[in-house]
Length: 270
Image (cartoon, rainbow, N blue to C red; front, side):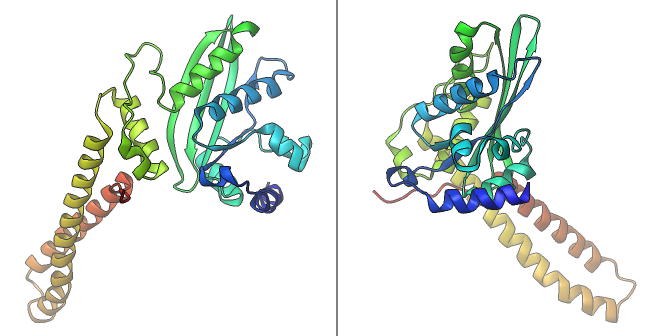
């Protein structure tokens, strides 16, 4: 797998295209099929790839692109890469920010489509969907298109009320990563919140966390020498130990929340 990753990185890194370079790169991994004919691998893969291309937000590479660069046998070994560690390895080598991986299984007369959107650089799953559709060749295109739209927040999950993602001029002034975070928030919470309100809330959260980190860090910096001095002069005094422990836990907790929260949203000047 490592040799394939290296080859992919060299080949794709050398062939970046002009207009598409501005868009974040997304790789559609070969899909895993269960209880379905092998010949459908290529069909389903191309349908997913074209559905994502139709969104117009990514520089999309699908199985046919990888086959053309590597040969079908080598590209096929990437099938089954749907976990974060594997995605991070492949995404890093390709220079791709996002990967889409998935499985399609036949259950009775239905297809169950499971797709994941993975941020390879941040090593986390941004969204995942499970979509059920009738096993009808005439409906494959629609079923996979609906699954892709749900994955990217363009369509509410089955059984849920659609959550609107209003178009906002602010979108052009934020990074694509933050737009994806906003889409994921709206699609998972079902809240009809505007982009500007979401940006304001995220930046407020980030500011509060920063202030908390500064306060906890200051207390921690003062507690360390106090702890050392008191241990030398008053070994039985437990207060410095308690202060140091509390400040350490507080600082670690705030840093952990800040890391998971990803941070505020940078808005470019007009």
